[in-house]
Length: 210
Image 1 (cartoon, rainbow, N blue to C red):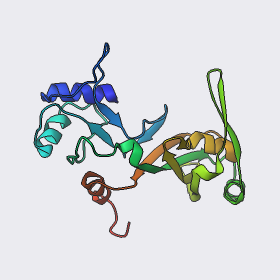
Image 2 (tube, rainbow, N blue to C red; image 1 turned 90 degrees about the vertical axis):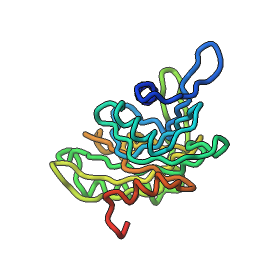
Image 3 (cartoon, helix red, strand yellow; image 1 turned 180 degrees about the vertical axis):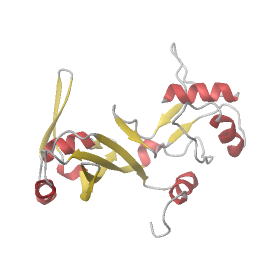
Image 4 (tube, helix red, strand yellow; image 1 turned 90 degrees about the horizontal axis):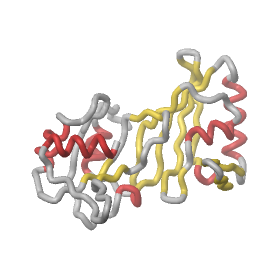
């Protein structure tokens, strides 16, 4: 995704800023990179430029160079000393589709109730030879069984996404003891403070009562 934004900025003729050093990197910062296999229609990114340009013009020019499936929805200008998106991120909302032929709605709901009622939920995260043990419970804000569609149970999850306090949707499903999801989709990212671009996205196509 960082490469996609870099190429779009080049195609748009925007003066993208780069870090200093032997291997300069584009100053493009994603609020929360997506895990492999997870889809999304709600992403936030900081793009730093060396030259000022009207935000609306930058949005228009960037849109033409983004790959299929990536749409720039809105833009707002922030000061270079403003808090990073990563530092403002608080939680993420996910949808997971779990095969209904393997687990019943009753069993899934019982597993959800048990997890939410627990004082602590030991878990571990493995990456290559490294194993990190942690308490999953404070990272899970809410889980709801929304119903069944297309042969799958639909689970809605709100998980913490703060620095050093981030829950993975697939780890939550593993802890629940349900089958691997056919699809995990990130619906939203929530910040401590919402800039105008975030508010504009929330209004776009959302029911008035949300």
